[in-house]
Length: 239
Image (cartoon, rainbow, N blue to C red):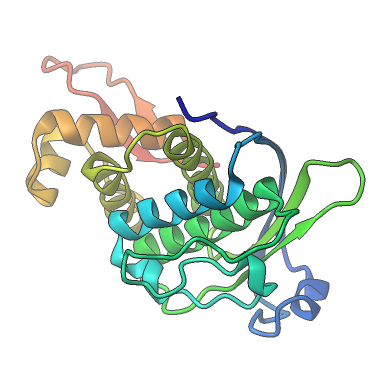
């Protein structure tokens, strides 16, 4: 059984951080950033193979991951090739698996944000802290703090599961599709039947997607005073 990473979101901040542009020239100094700190403990026996496995899982999950550009150190470049056959990194030890995982989480958040918002470009940076160890800062351009925090929560949960051997299947794609629907019409009440009709999926799938977005902090669930059907209703939360 593959070891599952232990990932804790230590803090999340939002706003302009002009100094981040000195770490990645593609980052606009005036754009707001989702600035998070993660604590990652991951004892993969073969970190290069484990990282390659995660990258291939992301490429199978969505072809847009293959279009990412990466400007970090060569040994930590992610999603090389974009054809689903990413080679194992030719890295001489030591290779920090936790740092590589933090970097992959950064790319996942970027991809999820662009999928939901239709943003054409989004940049970010991952930095390892010297003290305390196992902590990493992620800075990602983000048009909406509430959504960005949700995408971070999804990326952490999904990649933790994927590193432990679980697949990133179509259920996760339905969750992002539901988030896209909610983002495009933030004041619209969403119910499983409405989402199912819009996305062309079963009501059960729609319900799971809505509850996952609720648990990730993006949607609020409302209880109507008069609701004879018992169907749950969701709206984008106030953050």
